[in-house]
Image (cartoon, rainbow, N blue to C red; front, top):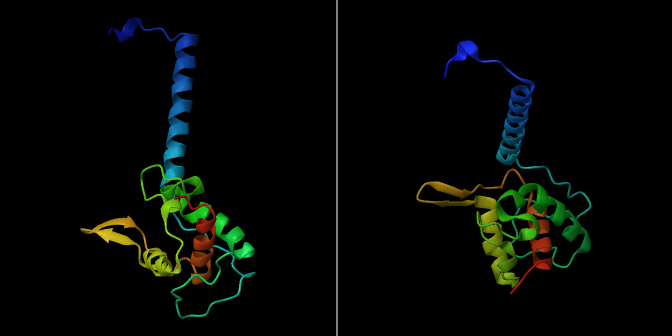
Length: 148
């Protein structure tokens, strides 16, 4: 292409402007998806559970815990497990978790310690980031969206 005879027209300027705006929007979306900083969860309205981790969900069917868990899930879990716990394929569909008390220990273990296989982190650990109360509130909410 001979650039000596190139004349920039208004159409070229509009096209260049549209391309620049598109790239900025895409970069913004990519950055937003990459922001995986866990968000604080206010559990002050729930019965505090103490330092020792429980093996059974103390908030099962607790309306306040379910309300808190809904928000906490959307802030901390939905980016991988999907809005409404409907997985988009990145991580397991949490609507399929059994709600029997003996599966509570499995849930809390995964939430606390995360999941690593062959050195690859599939889920980060949330212990030290989310409180026991927050994790059990999320579990209480997940039980309300359970599917067979």
